[in-house]
Image (cartoon, rainbow, N blue to C red; front, top):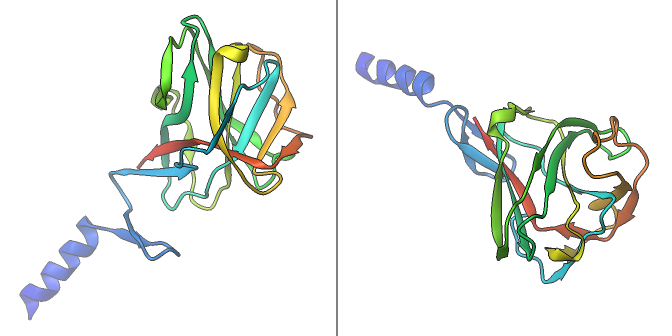
Length: 188
């Protein structure tokens, strides 16, 4: 009996887990979690330059550090630049930037999931916080992103000059009825 109690204590200390509302178990330490829209959209289009597009992510079940932003895109210009960023807040109007990063000369990309590492930025993710994933590009029609129809406000946009600081807070936005094919990975 004592051996069983010691084994149970060992398991509780060494293998902590969290049971989420969806019934899945997630490791409380060590591992990754994805939040966002991991589906390839049935439509595609070219984002306008001079705009930041921001889509709702999920609320993470684990705290950690954002590692990779994945976006389903294609690009026909080797010299296109892309900015990605993450906001924290329950609504776009009050959301504040967790961070943003510029990727220069992203290259010619065929349509598919493309990863942009932000691990070096130490952007923190906290349980119970709502996040928004955004992008801005100077590529014009050479960049294509995939999306699906969704609820109004699942994706929003706002004027932003490429290369300038991201708005803090995001402030007033215009709602779209789409959801961009993009998600973030959290390392915990």
